[in-house]
Amino acid sequence: MLEVRLLYKKLENYNSELEQTVLERTAELRDSEARFRRLTELTSDWYWEQDENGHFTKISGPVQEMLGIGADGALVKPRDDHGVHWDEAQREILEANLAARRPFLDFVYSRTNPNGSRQYLMVSGEPMFDPSGRFTGYRGIGKDVTEAMLPDFEPTQKY
Image (cartoon, rainbow, N blue to C red; front, side, top):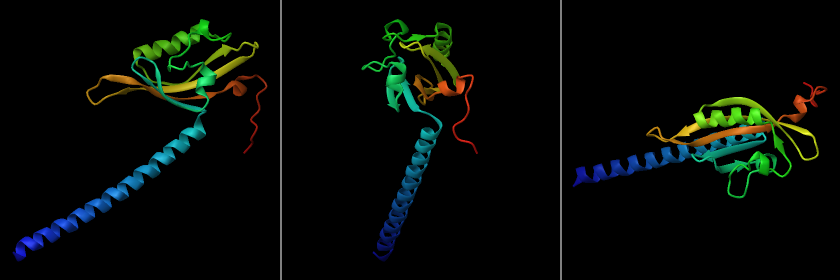
């Protein structure tokens, strides 16, 4: 009986240690996630994820307004974009990358807004796959780089 009691006590101690380890790892994971979110916010205007059909499933930031994303998460086609005209050649390159499931880094493309102004957007993205290797969509970040693309651009902050 004494030996059984000792084994139960040992098991109880082990469970307590395991529970403490799980709590510590969970706290570390939350801290890591918070750092990642903050870094993403500092380096981009928006974060996005798309499913395998190209519909946006997660977005943060002003990407809906900037890109003309419909209520269903689908990109509005250039001709239906309420007076916005995308540079077709650039858009085709981006769509080819997406169709081929290739990652892309700092891809800059532009569009002409209804008021005639030119807007430049920079996006980076990577394909996502499930453990079996099946394509599940894309994730990435984007930024409005219009000011930086203007010929007389000067940084507003000097270091």
